[in-house]
Length: 201
Image (cartoon, rainbow, N blue to C red; front, side, top):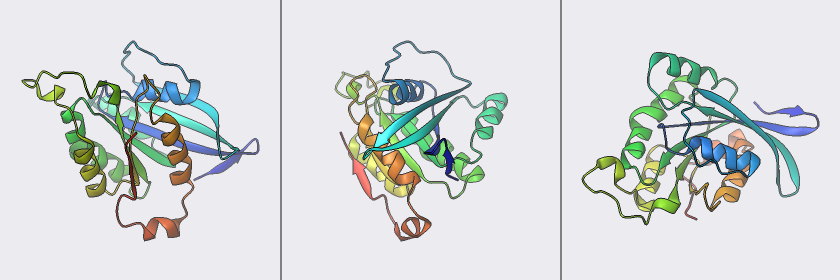
């Protein structure tokens, strides 16, 4: 549910996805414009900022969750799902396995606990797409925009957006899509039958 806080529309958004897929760096980039190059495993973290979309202020809370599948991490992660307006379901475009886990693990989990909450599929680390991969290692196989878009349609994502926290490509577009999607009326959601916008930036 959305609620008024100090006169500003407040939105709660939860990031889920595999460990090291770029969730923490993306949350930091959205809320503070900073790029955190070092990897620090996350159990749970909360980021907040006032963002402006079409000159309207919104108070955005981003809940960064652990990608680990142990019992304690899973229990803590699920607690953050309560009263969530929107999920950002993240994978790295340089890691095909992280995309496979979207359908195998992350969508089933959020649908079990929040069956009607909308989500955006987010492809992270697009700056690494053109690096030469080690094709002998499955986790290093790059994900094409077409393949990710198919997953977005198949899982009934509201949209698919590609971003780079390093270069900031796609970040502003993602912020706008967060606000638009979280504020979409129930009637609009019922009318949507497929992923309506796959934005490749």
